[in-house]
Image 1 (cartoon, rainbow, N blue to C red):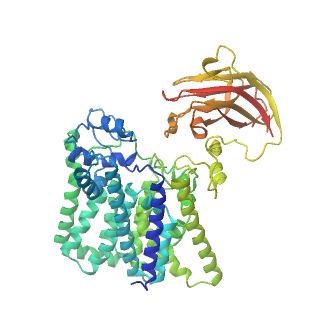
Image 2: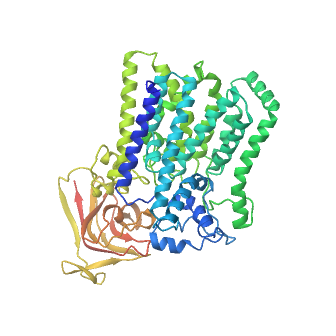
Image 3: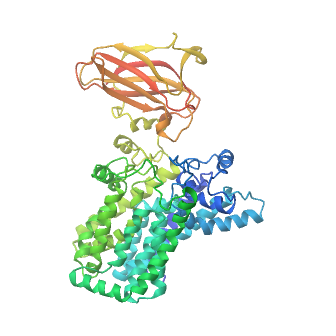
Length: 593
Protein backbone atom coordinates (compact mmCIF):
# COMPACT_ATOMS: atom_id res chain seq x y z
CA UNK A 1 0.00 0.00 0.00
CA UNK A 2 2.88 2.40 0.76
CA UNK A 3 3.98 2.08 -2.88
CA UNK A 4 0.60 3.39 -4.05
CA UNK A 5 0.71 7.03 -5.18
CA UNK A 6 -2.88 7.56 -4.10
CA UNK A 7 -2.11 6.31 -0.58
CA UNK A 8 0.90 8.63 -0.36
CA UNK A 9 -1.31 11.44 -1.58
CA UNK A 10 -3.86 10.56 1.10
CA UNK A 11 -1.18 10.83 3.80
CA UNK A 12 0.08 14.11 2.34
CA UNK A 13 -3.30 15.84 2.35
CA UNK A 14 -4.12 14.57 5.86
CA UNK A 15 -0.84 16.06 7.13
CA UNK A 16 -1.47 19.34 5.27
CA UNK A 17 -5.01 19.69 6.64
CA UNK A 18 -3.83 18.79 10.15
CA UNK A 19 -1.11 21.47 9.88
CA UNK A 20 -3.72 24.16 9.19
CA UNK A 21 -5.83 22.83 12.06
CA UNK A 22 -2.95 22.93 14.56
CA UNK A 23 -1.84 26.41 13.41
CA UNK A 24 -5.40 27.71 13.72
CA UNK A 25 -6.12 26.32 17.19
CA UNK A 26 -2.70 27.24 18.56
CA UNK A 27 -3.68 30.90 18.12
CA UNK A 28 -6.23 30.30 20.85
CA UNK A 29 -8.60 30.46 22.49
CA UNK A 30 -10.20 27.20 21.35
CA UNK A 31 -13.82 28.09 20.54
CA UNK A 32 -15.50 25.80 18.05
CA UNK A 33 -18.97 25.90 19.65
CA UNK A 34 -19.67 29.39 18.34
CA UNK A 35 -21.89 31.14 15.79
CA UNK A 36 -23.75 28.57 13.61
CA UNK A 37 -22.14 25.66 15.42
CA UNK A 38 -23.68 26.77 18.72
CA UNK A 39 -27.10 26.32 17.10
CA UNK A 40 -26.25 22.93 15.55
CA UNK A 41 -24.88 21.77 18.91
CA UNK A 42 -27.59 23.13 21.24
CA UNK A 43 -29.65 19.92 21.00
CA UNK A 44 -27.02 17.88 22.87
CA UNK A 45 -26.60 19.85 26.12
CA UNK A 46 -30.33 20.58 26.08
CA UNK A 47 -31.16 16.85 26.07
CA UNK A 48 -28.32 15.21 27.99
CA UNK A 49 -27.32 17.87 30.53
CA UNK A 50 -30.11 20.39 31.14
CA UNK A 51 -33.21 18.31 30.31
CA UNK A 52 -34.72 21.36 28.63
CA UNK A 53 -35.09 21.04 24.87
CA UNK A 54 -38.43 22.83 24.67
CA UNK A 55 -37.69 26.26 26.15
CA UNK A 56 -33.85 26.30 26.33
CA UNK A 57 -33.99 28.39 29.50
CA UNK A 58 -30.42 27.40 30.36
CA UNK A 59 -28.92 29.50 27.56
CA UNK A 60 -28.58 32.90 29.33
CA UNK A 61 -26.32 31.45 32.01
CA UNK A 62 -24.06 29.78 29.40
CA UNK A 63 -23.91 32.96 27.29
CA UNK A 64 -23.03 35.03 30.36
CA UNK A 65 -20.34 32.56 31.44
CA UNK A 66 -18.66 31.92 28.07
CA UNK A 67 -19.82 34.85 25.89
CA UNK A 68 -20.55 32.56 22.93
CA UNK A 69 -22.03 34.03 19.77
CA UNK A 70 -25.08 32.58 18.05
CA UNK A 71 -26.61 30.64 20.94
CA UNK A 72 -29.18 33.36 21.55
CA UNK A 73 -29.89 33.77 17.81
CA UNK A 74 -30.49 30.10 16.96
CA UNK A 75 -34.20 30.34 17.88
CA UNK A 76 -35.65 33.27 15.90
CA UNK A 77 -38.95 34.70 17.11
CA UNK A 78 -41.98 32.92 15.67
CA UNK A 79 -45.59 34.07 15.41
CA UNK A 80 -46.66 31.07 17.48
CA UNK A 81 -44.24 32.00 20.26
CA UNK A 82 -42.65 28.53 20.16
CA UNK A 83 -38.91 28.18 20.77
CA UNK A 84 -37.60 26.20 17.79
CA UNK A 85 -33.92 25.73 16.93
CA UNK A 86 -33.70 26.84 13.33
CA UNK A 87 -30.81 24.51 12.45
CA UNK A 88 -31.62 20.89 11.49
CA UNK A 89 -30.68 18.17 13.93
CA UNK A 90 -28.26 16.33 11.63
CA UNK A 91 -25.08 18.03 12.83
CA UNK A 92 -25.96 17.34 16.46
CA UNK A 93 -26.05 13.64 15.56
CA UNK A 94 -22.61 13.99 13.96
CA UNK A 95 -21.27 15.61 17.15
CA UNK A 96 -22.72 12.92 19.40
CA UNK A 97 -19.62 10.64 19.60
CA UNK A 98 -17.34 13.59 20.42
CA UNK A 99 -19.84 15.04 22.87
CA UNK A 100 -20.26 11.69 24.63
CA UNK A 101 -16.52 11.17 25.07
CA UNK A 102 -16.07 14.75 26.28
CA UNK A 103 -18.97 14.51 28.74
CA UNK A 104 -17.61 11.29 30.23
CA UNK A 105 -14.20 12.91 30.63
CA UNK A 106 -15.62 16.10 32.14
CA UNK A 107 -17.81 14.13 34.54
CA UNK A 108 -14.94 11.95 35.75
CA UNK A 109 -12.37 14.77 35.95
CA UNK A 110 -12.16 18.23 37.46
CA UNK A 111 -13.54 19.85 34.31
CA UNK A 112 -16.92 21.55 34.29
CA UNK A 113 -19.52 19.17 32.83
CA UNK A 114 -21.77 21.90 31.42
CA UNK A 115 -21.45 21.08 27.72
CA UNK A 116 -19.30 24.11 26.92
CA UNK A 117 -16.00 23.74 28.78
CA UNK A 118 -12.78 22.95 26.92
CA UNK A 119 -13.21 19.13 26.80
CA UNK A 120 -16.38 19.54 24.72
CA UNK A 121 -14.62 21.74 22.17
CA UNK A 122 -11.74 19.26 21.94
CA UNK A 123 -14.16 16.34 21.59
CA UNK A 124 -15.81 17.98 18.60
CA UNK A 125 -12.44 18.82 17.01
CA UNK A 126 -11.27 15.20 17.30
CA UNK A 127 -14.47 13.73 15.85
CA UNK A 128 -14.25 16.24 12.99
CA UNK A 129 -10.71 15.09 12.29
CA UNK A 130 -11.93 11.48 12.19
CA UNK A 131 -14.65 12.41 9.70
CA UNK A 132 -12.00 14.03 7.51
CA UNK A 133 -10.01 10.75 7.44
CA UNK A 134 -13.12 8.77 6.52
CA UNK A 135 -14.12 11.25 3.80
CA UNK A 136 -10.77 11.27 2.03
CA UNK A 137 -10.33 7.50 2.38
CA UNK A 138 -13.67 6.79 0.72
CA UNK A 139 -13.11 9.41 -1.95
CA UNK A 140 -9.88 7.59 -2.78
CA UNK A 141 -11.74 4.26 -2.92
CA UNK A 142 -14.44 5.75 -5.15
CA UNK A 143 -12.02 7.29 -7.64
CA UNK A 144 -9.94 4.09 -7.74
CA UNK A 145 -12.90 2.29 -9.28
CA UNK A 146 -12.69 4.40 -12.44
CA UNK A 147 -9.16 5.82 -12.73
CA UNK A 148 -5.49 4.94 -12.61
CA UNK A 149 -3.65 5.37 -9.32
CA UNK A 150 -1.70 8.51 -10.32
CA UNK A 151 -4.89 10.24 -11.42
CA UNK A 152 -6.53 9.37 -8.09
CA UNK A 153 -3.47 10.74 -6.25
CA UNK A 154 -3.51 14.06 -8.09
CA UNK A 155 -7.29 14.43 -7.79
CA UNK A 156 -7.05 13.96 -4.01
CA UNK A 157 -4.50 16.78 -3.84
CA UNK A 158 -6.66 19.04 -6.00
CA UNK A 159 -9.82 18.47 -3.95
CA UNK A 160 -8.22 18.45 -0.48
CA UNK A 161 -5.66 21.23 -0.94
CA UNK A 162 -6.90 23.22 -3.93
CA UNK A 163 -10.49 23.87 -2.81
CA UNK A 164 -12.17 25.36 0.25
CA UNK A 165 -12.66 21.82 1.56
CA UNK A 166 -9.15 22.39 2.94
CA UNK A 167 -10.20 25.18 5.28
CA UNK A 168 -13.45 23.51 6.30
CA UNK A 169 -11.76 20.19 7.06
CA UNK A 170 -8.90 21.96 8.86
CA UNK A 171 -10.37 24.81 10.88
CA UNK A 172 -14.15 24.86 10.32
CA UNK A 173 -14.60 21.16 10.97
CA UNK A 174 -17.75 21.66 13.01
CA UNK A 175 -19.65 23.30 10.18
CA UNK A 176 -21.87 21.02 8.11
CA UNK A 177 -19.87 21.17 4.87
CA UNK A 178 -16.98 18.78 5.59
CA UNK A 179 -19.40 16.37 7.28
CA UNK A 180 -21.69 16.38 4.24
CA UNK A 181 -18.66 15.80 2.03
CA UNK A 182 -18.00 12.62 4.02
CA UNK A 183 -21.63 11.51 3.73
CA UNK A 184 -21.58 12.08 -0.02
CA UNK A 185 -18.38 10.05 -0.39
CA UNK A 186 -19.90 7.17 1.60
CA UNK A 187 -23.20 7.23 -0.30
CA UNK A 188 -21.65 7.34 -3.78
CA UNK A 189 -19.06 4.67 -3.02
CA UNK A 190 -21.61 2.27 -1.54
CA UNK A 191 -24.01 3.01 -4.39
CA UNK A 192 -21.40 1.77 -6.87
CA UNK A 193 -20.93 -1.36 -4.77
CA UNK A 194 -24.65 -2.05 -4.35
CA UNK A 195 -25.21 -2.08 -8.11
CA UNK A 196 -22.39 -4.60 -8.39
CA UNK A 197 -23.59 -6.74 -5.49
CA UNK A 198 -27.02 -5.79 -4.10
CA UNK A 199 -27.28 -6.57 -0.37
CA UNK A 200 -29.80 -5.54 2.30
CA UNK A 201 -27.03 -4.36 4.60
CA UNK A 202 -25.57 -1.96 2.05
CA UNK A 203 -28.86 -0.52 0.78
CA UNK A 204 -30.10 0.00 4.34
CA UNK A 205 -26.90 1.85 5.12
CA UNK A 206 -27.40 4.04 2.05
CA UNK A 207 -30.92 4.83 3.24
CA UNK A 208 -29.68 5.79 6.71
CA UNK A 209 -27.01 8.04 5.18
CA UNK A 210 -29.51 9.74 2.85
CA UNK A 211 -31.78 10.34 5.83
CA UNK A 212 -28.89 11.91 7.73
CA UNK A 213 -28.03 14.09 4.73
CA UNK A 214 -31.63 15.31 4.54
CA UNK A 215 -31.69 16.42 8.19
CA UNK A 216 -28.30 18.08 7.86
CA UNK A 217 -29.11 20.12 4.75
CA UNK A 218 -32.58 19.28 3.36
CA UNK A 219 -31.85 20.45 -0.20
CA UNK A 220 -29.14 17.79 -0.54
CA UNK A 221 -31.78 15.05 -0.49
CA UNK A 222 -31.82 15.26 -4.30
CA UNK A 223 -28.69 13.09 -4.10
CA UNK A 224 -31.27 10.29 -3.95
CA UNK A 225 -31.73 10.73 -7.72
CA UNK A 226 -28.03 10.01 -8.26
CA UNK A 227 -28.35 6.84 -6.18
CA UNK A 228 -31.42 5.61 -8.06
CA UNK A 229 -30.09 6.36 -11.53
CA UNK A 230 -26.38 5.72 -11.16
CA UNK A 231 -25.05 4.34 -14.47
CA UNK A 232 -28.21 5.25 -16.36
CA UNK A 233 -27.03 6.82 -19.64
CA UNK A 234 -29.70 6.08 -22.28
CA UNK A 235 -33.28 4.87 -22.70
CA UNK A 236 -32.34 1.20 -22.65
CA UNK A 237 -30.34 1.54 -19.43
CA UNK A 238 -33.25 3.53 -17.92
CA UNK A 239 -35.67 0.68 -18.67
CA UNK A 240 -33.19 -1.82 -17.24
CA UNK A 241 -32.88 0.28 -14.10
CA UNK A 242 -36.62 0.44 -13.54
CA UNK A 243 -36.77 -3.33 -13.95
CA UNK A 244 -33.93 -3.83 -11.45
CA UNK A 245 -35.54 -1.53 -8.89
CA UNK A 246 -38.83 -3.38 -9.19
CA UNK A 247 -37.05 -6.69 -8.70
CA UNK A 248 -35.29 -5.26 -5.64
CA UNK A 249 -38.36 -3.62 -4.14
CA UNK A 250 -37.64 -5.12 -0.73
CA UNK A 251 -34.19 -3.53 -0.86
CA UNK A 252 -35.77 -0.18 -1.68
CA UNK A 253 -38.21 -0.65 1.18
CA UNK A 254 -35.30 -1.27 3.54
CA UNK A 255 -33.61 1.93 2.31
CA UNK A 256 -36.83 3.92 2.72
CA UNK A 257 -37.35 2.61 6.25
CA UNK A 258 -33.78 3.55 7.13
CA UNK A 259 -34.18 7.05 5.72
CA UNK A 260 -37.57 7.62 7.38
CA UNK A 261 -36.22 6.46 10.74
CA UNK A 262 -33.52 9.12 10.62
CA UNK A 263 -35.76 11.87 9.22
CA UNK A 264 -38.34 11.16 11.94
CA UNK A 265 -35.87 12.50 14.53
CA UNK A 266 -36.30 15.96 13.01
CA UNK A 267 -40.08 15.60 12.69
CA UNK A 268 -40.44 14.50 16.30
CA UNK A 269 -38.39 17.49 17.49
CA UNK A 270 -40.55 19.91 15.49
CA UNK A 271 -43.73 18.34 16.86
CA UNK A 272 -42.39 18.46 20.42
CA UNK A 273 -41.16 22.06 20.26
CA UNK A 274 -43.87 23.69 18.14
CA UNK A 275 -46.85 21.34 17.96
CA UNK A 276 -46.45 20.97 14.19
CA UNK A 277 -44.90 18.04 12.33
CA UNK A 278 -43.45 20.28 9.61
CA UNK A 279 -41.80 23.61 10.44
CA UNK A 280 -40.01 26.08 8.17
CA UNK A 281 -37.43 27.10 10.73
CA UNK A 282 -35.64 29.69 8.57
CA UNK A 283 -38.36 32.34 8.88
CA UNK A 284 -37.45 35.49 6.99
CA UNK A 285 -34.98 33.64 4.76
CA UNK A 286 -35.61 31.94 1.45
CA UNK A 287 -34.85 31.60 -2.25
CA UNK A 288 -35.08 33.83 -5.32
CA UNK A 289 -35.43 31.55 -8.33
CA UNK A 290 -34.93 34.18 -11.06
CA UNK A 291 -31.16 33.70 -11.20
CA UNK A 292 -30.30 37.16 -9.86
CA UNK A 293 -27.35 35.89 -7.79
CA UNK A 294 -25.79 33.42 -10.23
CA UNK A 295 -23.19 35.76 -11.74
CA UNK A 296 -22.16 37.05 -8.31
CA UNK A 297 -21.95 33.48 -6.96
CA UNK A 298 -19.66 32.40 -9.77
CA UNK A 299 -17.33 35.39 -10.22
CA UNK A 300 -18.24 38.08 -7.67
CA UNK A 301 -15.50 39.14 -5.27
CA UNK A 302 -17.73 38.89 -2.24
CA UNK A 303 -17.99 35.10 -2.45
CA UNK A 304 -17.49 34.11 -6.07
CA UNK A 305 -16.95 30.36 -6.30
CA UNK A 306 -14.43 30.58 -9.14
CA UNK A 307 -12.68 33.59 -7.60
CA UNK A 308 -11.81 31.77 -4.38
CA UNK A 309 -11.72 28.21 -5.76
CA UNK A 310 -10.48 28.67 -9.35
CA UNK A 311 -9.38 25.01 -9.56
CA UNK A 312 -13.07 24.14 -9.93
CA UNK A 313 -12.77 25.33 -13.52
CA UNK A 314 -11.28 21.86 -13.94
CA UNK A 315 -14.44 20.43 -12.40
CA UNK A 316 -16.70 22.30 -14.81
CA UNK A 317 -14.59 21.66 -17.92
CA UNK A 318 -14.12 18.03 -16.86
CA UNK A 319 -17.82 17.30 -17.21
CA UNK A 320 -17.34 16.96 -20.96
CA UNK A 321 -14.47 14.41 -20.96
CA UNK A 322 -16.31 12.57 -18.16
CA UNK A 323 -19.27 12.25 -20.52
CA UNK A 324 -17.12 11.16 -23.47
CA UNK A 325 -14.67 8.71 -21.87
CA UNK A 326 -15.56 5.02 -21.78
CA UNK A 327 -14.78 4.50 -18.12
CA UNK A 328 -17.15 7.27 -16.94
CA UNK A 329 -19.69 7.86 -19.70
CA UNK A 330 -22.27 5.57 -18.07
CA UNK A 331 -22.23 7.49 -14.78
CA UNK A 332 -22.00 10.99 -16.26
CA UNK A 333 -25.68 11.79 -16.82
CA UNK A 334 -26.93 11.57 -13.20
CA UNK A 335 -23.82 13.43 -12.02
CA UNK A 336 -24.27 16.29 -14.48
CA UNK A 337 -27.99 16.62 -13.73
CA UNK A 338 -27.39 16.63 -9.98
CA UNK A 339 -24.62 19.24 -10.22
CA UNK A 340 -26.75 21.52 -12.39
CA UNK A 341 -29.72 21.29 -10.02
CA UNK A 342 -27.79 21.65 -6.76
CA UNK A 343 -25.72 24.57 -8.09
CA UNK A 344 -28.91 26.37 -9.13
CA UNK A 345 -30.45 25.77 -5.71
CA UNK A 346 -27.34 26.90 -3.80
CA UNK A 347 -26.93 30.03 -5.91
CA UNK A 348 -30.61 30.97 -5.47
CA UNK A 349 -30.48 31.34 -1.66
CA UNK A 350 -31.07 35.00 -0.76
CA UNK A 351 -28.13 34.96 1.62
CA UNK A 352 -26.01 33.84 -1.33
CA UNK A 353 -22.72 34.60 0.42
CA UNK A 354 -23.70 32.20 3.24
CA UNK A 355 -22.35 34.41 6.03
CA UNK A 356 -18.72 34.41 7.11
CA UNK A 357 -16.51 31.74 5.63
CA UNK A 358 -14.11 31.08 2.80
CA UNK A 359 -15.59 30.92 -0.69
CA UNK A 360 -18.87 29.24 -1.63
CA UNK A 361 -18.92 26.79 1.25
CA UNK A 362 -22.29 25.31 0.30
CA UNK A 363 -20.67 23.77 -2.81
CA UNK A 364 -18.22 21.62 -0.82
CA UNK A 365 -20.33 18.48 -0.54
CA UNK A 366 -20.74 18.38 -4.34
CA UNK A 367 -16.94 18.20 -4.76
CA UNK A 368 -17.25 14.42 -4.34
CA UNK A 369 -19.00 14.29 -7.71
CA UNK A 370 -16.92 17.07 -9.22
CA UNK A 371 -13.82 15.02 -8.34
CA UNK A 372 -14.87 12.43 -10.93
CA UNK A 373 -15.03 15.17 -13.58
CA UNK A 374 -11.63 16.51 -12.49
CA UNK A 375 -10.11 13.03 -12.71
CA UNK A 376 -11.63 12.59 -16.18
CA UNK A 377 -10.06 15.87 -17.30
CA UNK A 378 -6.67 14.81 -15.93
CA UNK A 379 -6.96 11.58 -17.92
CA UNK A 380 -7.82 13.62 -21.03
CA UNK A 381 -4.92 16.05 -20.50
CA UNK A 382 -2.45 13.20 -20.02
CA UNK A 383 -2.87 12.40 -23.72
CA UNK A 384 -2.08 15.95 -24.88
CA UNK A 385 1.19 17.69 -25.74
CA UNK A 386 3.87 18.54 -23.20
CA UNK A 387 2.97 22.23 -23.49
CA UNK A 388 -0.62 21.50 -22.44
CA UNK A 389 0.61 19.30 -19.60
CA UNK A 390 3.02 22.00 -18.38
CA UNK A 391 0.36 24.72 -18.51
CA UNK A 392 -2.16 22.50 -16.70
CA UNK A 393 0.40 21.55 -14.06
CA UNK A 394 1.30 25.21 -13.48
CA UNK A 395 -2.39 26.09 -13.10
CA UNK A 396 -2.89 23.30 -10.54
CA UNK A 397 0.17 24.40 -8.56
CA UNK A 398 -1.00 28.02 -8.59
CA UNK A 399 -4.50 27.08 -7.41
CA UNK A 400 -3.17 24.87 -4.60
CA UNK A 401 -0.77 27.61 -3.47
CA UNK A 402 -3.50 30.26 -3.64
CA UNK A 403 -5.95 28.15 -1.66
CA UNK A 404 -3.48 27.26 1.09
CA UNK A 405 -2.12 30.82 1.31
CA UNK A 406 -5.57 32.41 1.53
CA UNK A 407 -6.70 29.79 4.03
CA UNK A 408 -3.82 30.81 6.30
CA UNK A 409 -4.69 34.48 5.67
CA UNK A 410 -8.23 33.78 6.83
CA UNK A 411 -7.53 31.50 9.79
CA UNK A 412 -3.98 32.05 11.04
CA UNK A 413 -2.37 35.33 9.95
CA UNK A 414 -5.52 37.46 9.72
CA UNK A 415 -6.63 40.21 7.36
CA UNK A 416 -8.72 38.14 4.95
CA UNK A 417 -12.34 39.31 4.82
CA UNK A 418 -14.58 36.23 4.85
CA UNK A 419 -17.97 37.88 4.46
CA UNK A 420 -17.75 41.26 2.73
CA UNK A 421 -14.75 41.09 0.42
CA UNK A 422 -14.47 43.67 -2.36
CA UNK A 423 -12.35 43.66 -5.50
CA UNK A 424 -10.15 46.52 -4.29
CA UNK A 425 -9.46 44.93 -0.91
CA UNK A 426 -8.88 41.50 -2.47
CA UNK A 427 -6.10 42.78 -4.72
CA UNK A 428 -4.70 45.00 -1.98
CA UNK A 429 -4.06 42.00 0.31
CA UNK A 430 -3.29 39.50 -2.47
CA UNK A 431 -0.14 37.57 -1.55
CA UNK A 432 0.36 39.63 1.63
CA UNK A 433 1.12 37.76 4.84
CA UNK A 434 1.14 40.90 7.00
CA UNK A 435 -2.06 42.81 6.22
CA UNK A 436 -2.30 46.41 7.39
CA UNK A 437 -5.65 46.87 9.23
CA UNK A 438 -5.97 50.32 7.62
CA UNK A 439 -6.43 48.62 4.26
CA UNK A 440 -9.96 47.64 5.28
CA UNK A 441 -11.00 51.07 4.11
CA UNK A 442 -11.23 49.39 0.68
CA UNK A 443 -14.09 47.14 1.84
CA UNK A 444 -16.75 49.87 1.59
CA UNK A 445 -15.03 52.89 0.12
CA UNK A 446 -15.07 52.10 -3.61
CA UNK A 447 -13.60 55.52 -4.41
CA UNK A 448 -10.66 55.03 -2.04
CA UNK A 449 -7.41 56.18 -3.64
CA UNK A 450 -4.82 53.44 -3.93
CA UNK A 451 -1.21 54.56 -3.76
CA UNK A 452 0.52 57.70 -2.54
CA UNK A 453 -1.10 61.14 -2.56
CA UNK A 454 0.83 63.59 -4.76
CA UNK A 455 -1.03 66.73 -3.70
CA UNK A 456 -3.60 67.65 -1.03
CA UNK A 457 -5.54 70.95 -1.12
CA UNK A 458 -7.43 71.69 2.15
CA UNK A 459 -11.03 72.82 1.81
CA UNK A 460 -12.34 72.83 5.39
CA UNK A 461 -11.18 72.14 8.96
CA UNK A 462 -13.60 71.62 11.88
CA UNK A 463 -12.47 71.16 15.50
CA UNK A 464 -15.96 71.01 17.07
CA UNK A 465 -15.38 73.70 19.68
CA UNK A 466 -19.10 74.47 19.32
CA UNK A 467 -22.45 73.24 20.60
CA UNK A 468 -21.87 69.90 18.83
CA UNK A 469 -18.75 69.25 20.90
CA UNK A 470 -18.73 67.37 24.20
CA UNK A 471 -16.38 67.45 27.18
CA UNK A 472 -17.10 63.80 28.08
CA UNK A 473 -13.86 62.81 26.34
CA UNK A 474 -11.29 65.32 25.17
CA UNK A 475 -8.63 65.11 22.50
CA UNK A 476 -5.57 67.18 23.39
CA UNK A 477 -7.74 69.35 25.61
CA UNK A 478 -10.40 70.11 23.03
CA UNK A 479 -14.04 69.03 22.79
CA UNK A 480 -15.06 65.96 20.78
CA UNK A 481 -18.30 64.74 19.23
CA UNK A 482 -20.03 61.77 20.90
CA UNK A 483 -21.72 59.36 18.47
CA UNK A 484 -24.47 57.19 19.99
CA UNK A 485 -27.05 54.62 18.87
CA UNK A 486 -29.76 55.60 16.44
CA UNK A 487 -28.34 59.05 15.74
CA UNK A 488 -27.30 60.34 12.33
CA UNK A 489 -24.82 63.02 13.38
CA UNK A 490 -24.18 65.72 10.79
CA UNK A 491 -20.57 66.67 11.40
CA UNK A 492 -20.22 69.17 8.58
CA UNK A 493 -22.20 70.73 5.73
CA UNK A 494 -20.97 73.33 3.27
CA UNK A 495 -21.80 74.87 -0.07
CA UNK A 496 -19.03 74.13 -2.52
CA UNK A 497 -18.36 74.12 -6.24
CA UNK A 498 -16.50 71.05 -7.44
CA UNK A 499 -15.32 69.85 -10.82
CA UNK A 500 -15.92 66.47 -12.41
CA UNK A 501 -12.96 64.13 -11.88
CA UNK A 502 -11.84 65.62 -8.55
CA UNK A 503 -11.42 63.32 -5.55
CA UNK A 504 -12.20 64.46 -2.00
CA UNK A 505 -10.97 63.01 1.28
CA UNK A 506 -12.76 63.46 4.60
CA UNK A 507 -10.36 62.75 7.46
CA UNK A 508 -11.22 62.46 11.13
CA UNK A 509 -9.71 61.20 14.35
CA UNK A 510 -11.72 58.62 16.30
CA UNK A 511 -11.64 56.87 19.68
CA UNK A 512 -13.68 54.41 21.72
CA UNK A 513 -14.49 51.88 19.02
CA UNK A 514 -15.48 48.46 20.37
CA UNK A 515 -15.02 45.30 18.36
CA UNK A 516 -18.18 44.14 16.59
CA UNK A 517 -18.32 41.26 14.08
CA UNK A 518 -21.82 42.20 12.87
CA UNK A 519 -21.19 44.75 10.13
CA UNK A 520 -24.84 45.81 10.20
CA UNK A 521 -24.25 47.12 13.72
CA UNK A 522 -21.07 49.04 12.96
CA UNK A 523 -20.76 52.84 13.00
CA UNK A 524 -20.54 54.36 9.52
CA UNK A 525 -18.58 57.49 8.52
CA UNK A 526 -19.99 59.09 5.35
CA UNK A 527 -19.11 61.82 2.88
CA UNK A 528 -21.90 62.83 0.52
CA UNK A 529 -22.10 65.02 -2.58
CA UNK A 530 -25.38 66.84 -3.28
CA UNK A 531 -26.88 68.57 -6.29
CA UNK A 532 -29.96 70.78 -5.82
CA UNK A 533 -30.52 69.24 -2.39
CA UNK A 534 -30.37 65.61 -3.60
CA UNK A 535 -27.61 63.16 -2.64
CA UNK A 536 -25.95 62.02 -5.88
CA UNK A 537 -22.84 60.33 -4.42
CA UNK A 538 -22.32 58.67 -1.03
CA UNK A 539 -19.15 56.94 0.12
CA UNK A 540 -18.55 55.48 3.57
CA UNK A 541 -16.44 53.24 5.75
CA UNK A 542 -17.31 51.25 8.86
CA UNK A 543 -15.23 52.48 11.75
CA UNK A 544 -14.93 49.03 13.34
CA UNK A 545 -13.23 47.78 10.17
CA UNK A 546 -10.26 50.12 10.56
CA UNK A 547 -10.07 50.80 14.30
CA UNK A 548 -10.96 48.64 17.31
CA UNK A 549 -9.56 50.33 20.41
CA UNK A 550 -9.84 53.39 22.62
CA UNK A 551 -6.70 55.02 21.31
CA UNK A 552 -7.15 58.02 19.02
CA UNK A 553 -6.65 57.09 15.39
CA UNK A 554 -6.89 59.04 12.13
CA UNK A 555 -9.21 57.48 9.53
CA UNK A 556 -10.48 58.73 6.19
CA UNK A 557 -13.04 58.17 3.44
CA UNK A 558 -12.63 59.24 -0.21
CA UNK A 559 -15.21 60.22 -2.79
CA UNK A 560 -14.87 60.95 -6.51
CA UNK A 561 -16.81 63.74 -8.22
CA UNK A 562 -18.54 62.29 -11.29
CA UNK A 563 -20.57 65.31 -12.44
CA UNK A 564 -20.09 69.08 -12.60
CA UNK A 565 -23.18 70.43 -10.86
CA UNK A 566 -22.19 69.47 -7.29
CA UNK A 567 -23.11 72.34 -4.96
CA UNK A 568 -22.96 70.86 -1.47
CA UNK A 569 -20.84 68.54 0.71
CA UNK A 570 -22.05 66.67 3.79
CA UNK A 571 -20.01 64.65 6.29
CA UNK A 572 -21.92 62.56 8.83
CA UNK A 573 -21.90 59.43 10.97
CA UNK A 574 -24.55 56.75 11.46
CA UNK A 575 -24.72 54.41 14.44
CA UNK A 576 -27.10 51.44 14.81
CA UNK A 577 -25.96 49.75 18.02
CA UNK A 578 -26.17 50.83 21.64
CA UNK A 579 -22.65 49.66 22.49
CA UNK A 580 -21.03 51.63 19.65
CA UNK A 581 -20.32 54.83 21.56
CA UNK A 582 -17.64 56.63 19.54
CA UNK A 583 -15.90 59.97 19.92
CA UNK A 584 -14.59 61.93 16.90
CA UNK A 585 -12.63 65.14 16.44
CA UNK A 586 -10.64 67.27 13.98
CA UNK A 587 -12.52 66.83 10.72
CA UNK A 588 -10.60 67.79 7.60
CA UNK A 589 -11.93 67.81 4.03
CA UNK A 590 -9.39 68.09 1.19
CA UNK A 591 -9.06 67.66 -2.56
CA UNK A 592 -6.45 64.96 -3.20
CA UNK A 593 -4.52 63.95 -6.29
